Image 1 (tube, helix red, strand yellow):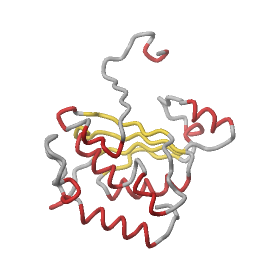
Image 2 (tube, one colour):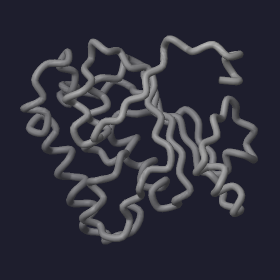
Image 3 (cartoon, helix red, strand yellow):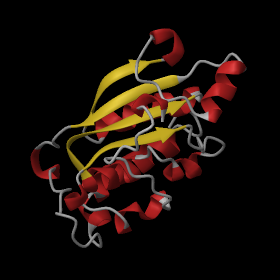
Image 4 (cartoon, one colour):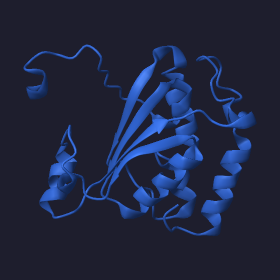
Amino acid sequence: EREYEGETPENLVFSEVDAMRIYDTFCAADGIGRIYINFPNPWDERAKHHKRRLTHPRQLFQYREFLAPGGEIWFKTDNDALFIATKRYMGACGFEITYLTDDLHASGFAPNYVSEHERLYVGQGKAIHFMIAKMAPLTGAEDKTTNGGKDMNNFFERNKARLDNFTRISTSVGARAD
């Protein structure tokens, strides 16, 4: 509220949605310009849980369905393995990393909206990893993810090859930073 001098911004929506079913909530017509993913569960205990990550390719392809062209994902975490994996996921899913730091508070990046979790972690001396990833067009035959907000029934079929590839990679390296 301080940044807006007491006025309520009119271009901001908070939504409590099951991220695995986010395609039921938003569509391309919504023209979402930015998604903030702050300190999600890293799901790093077992490789089979990686598909639950909010930055897993399965989720990133869903975000592509409703992000406006050039839309961004702002991502913060204190988890090293999740950050390393997310960098790889973003590149493979057609997102260009436009800003990247392993210590957000030392970087001087602004604006930085500090959450309770972030304040807690910084107080414990943990460095905060941060990235901004901009959605770029997919290349070749894979550029079939935009469906104008219509039926998502064939979403996984359209992206099966890419998702299968990540499943194969994740299980082959165990629970490391996948």
